Length: 225
Image (cartoon, rainbow, N blue to C red):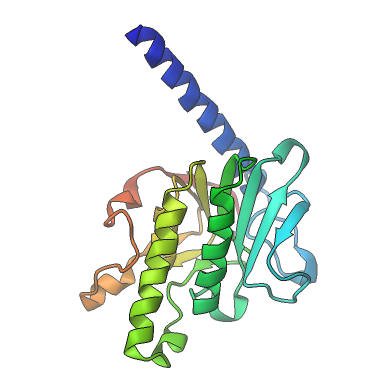
């Protein structure tokens, strides 16, 4: 009985890994190939099939979070695309709010099999918190923002499906913490990562792993961008 249970668990693990590999392939495209441009002339950090449903406001020139439900052979894969090019995908109050809403919807969607978190902006994954916006906040607003960001990242970490961070470019501070909340991190050879706030003796405010996840499950790819 114990052996049968172990074999069953191994089969489930293999199935999850196959699904994660398919989602990663959908997010990153073929190894060694440059990703085609997205609409609006913004080059994608990863090649993606055409979108199915979208989430949030429609047809905006810059939608801070793009949620895509893929179709056909990729059905069940949902891609969360960070899209604040003017701020290097820095985490603003609005972006965190949109992410919280999107993750909440995914949590109860039984058709979702895998979630991929990636950037729509070439050369940057996420620069961390939006410090320009934070400088204008009252101290009470800062506390509320950090709490909501932490809660959102915890919700991402606790999603009942495999989550993959496709890192193309720079992931710093809260941006790296966001990637650490995912089950798997896949990075382009150009990726740069760091919890730079530690240089100021500041403990990462939203990291659900305590920094321990940085060296766990990080896959490097030679895919060129």
